[in-house]
Image 1 (cartoon, one colour):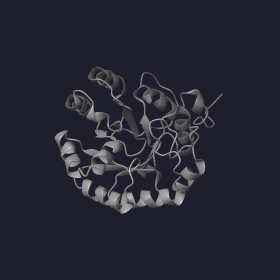
Image 2 (cartoon, helix red, strand yellow):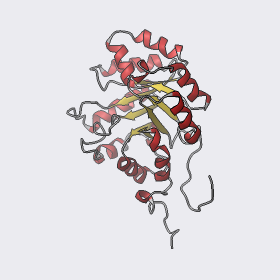
Image 3 (cartoon, one colour):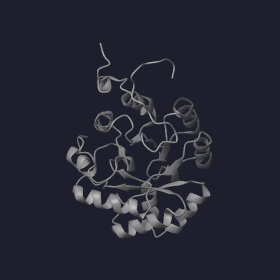
Image 4 (cartoon, helix red, strand yellow):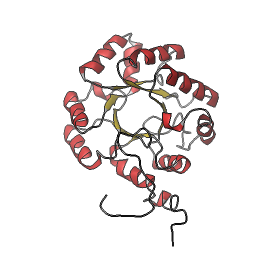
Length: 256
C-alpha cells in the first residue's frame, strides 16, 4: 500500500480461500487484459470469461496465458458448459479445457433443464480433472427457487466435488439472489447461511449496492463474483471501509 492507515479490516492474502474476488471478462482485448493486470493483479483471484464469449474471443490462448502468467486462474462461464451439454458434447468440452490448460471449470444449469442428479454426476466427473465451481440458481427471473431448494442443491453439489458454489445473479444482478430491481433477497441469503458455510459460497454481486450489502453482512473477506474489471479497486475500497458506503462500518471506537 502507498501509506499507512490504522484500524483497517485485515484482508486475506493470495492465494485466498475467503475474501475471494471473481472478475468477469466479457471480451477484453489482449491490451486491455495487460492494462487490467498491471493495476489489479493483487486484488483479483480468478477471472471468468463470461458465458460463452470464449467462443468468439480472438487470441484466446494468448489471453489465457496473460492471466496465467500473472498468477490469475481463468475459467469459462457456465453457459459454455451448458452449450456443450445440450448438444451432447460433454467429452468435447473436457477436451477444450485440456486444450487451453484450464484448471478450473464452472458447471451450471441456469439456461437448460438438467436433472440435479445429472448435474452432480457432471461435477463428480469433472472434479477428477479440474477444480469445479458450480452455480446454483436460474437465469430466468420468473423462476423463483425456494430457500430450502437452494440449500439442498448447494450441499449436494459440494458433496459431489464442487470446491465452491456460486449464487446466481447474472452479469446484471437482477435474478437469482436478487429481485429484478437489484435488491437482495435478504431472507434467502440469511437462510442459506444457516446451512452452508460462507467460505464455500461465492455471491455474484455485480452492483455496488449489492457488494456493500454483503460486506456489511459478512465482512471484508466475503467471497464476491461477477465483478467488472473497472470495479475491482472500487470493491477493495468497499471491503476496507475506504468508501462512503462502508466508511463507518469498520471504525468501531476508532474515530474522533
